[in-house]
Length: 319
Image (cartoon, rainbow, N blue to C red; front, side):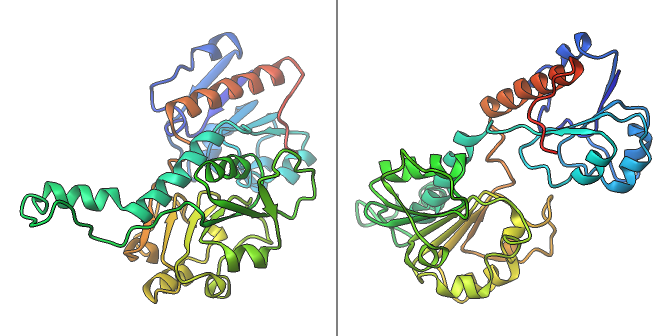
């Protein structure tokens, strides 16, 4: 059985081990990155195909008769044509719940940067502004205390619930919207409300919804105009949930106070993306998932997924 990893670099840039593959499959090939014109040639003899962000399309699946299993090195699996895989008897698995705490942590790193702007003040001090100051303190931007503010969450899965716990610990009022009607016992400190209520009443809105037809472009001009002028928007879910041109214009026109995003509609970022020029938008390069601890968990779950498939007992199957 041959296993091929198409884009290993981000999940494992070299600080984790692939050695377990030697005892799991007969043959394996590991590529740090694969361009679109290389995918077929590298995949054509694979029984197991592993991808992080390289799309596996219907057209590709139809040209890979040996393929039996697709393992995604991520939670999201929208890059796979799961319907076509199922029609061809190919199982698809993902990596669930490996980066929950890391994503929740980055939500508040982005929020703190917007409310306290540590980076800006650190630069000011290092540039000598404090040494030249006549006063014992100063601040370059207005400072915002989060206690007693309303934190709104859109999408209340594992990450959304982890974010709620941190917001509660910071004495914030937490409200949430989720179309899912499952039981939310244990979250008595969270008020579940309508989407409209979250948009209008929140001082902070954090997006934790999957990318679907319903959520694509959810945050648009109308959405932003309903938010408080003093509110902050945070996105660690999927880039296309936000209409980036509309967000840019909202920030430029002071419709909202600021935004922090870890994801963009196209990644790597395109130079034409308007958010790159938005002064009040703080952007990180899709790093919420990427701590060593989280990637170690990802690799362990990936190992379990592959071993389960090889033994005829696939787990974390999403199709």
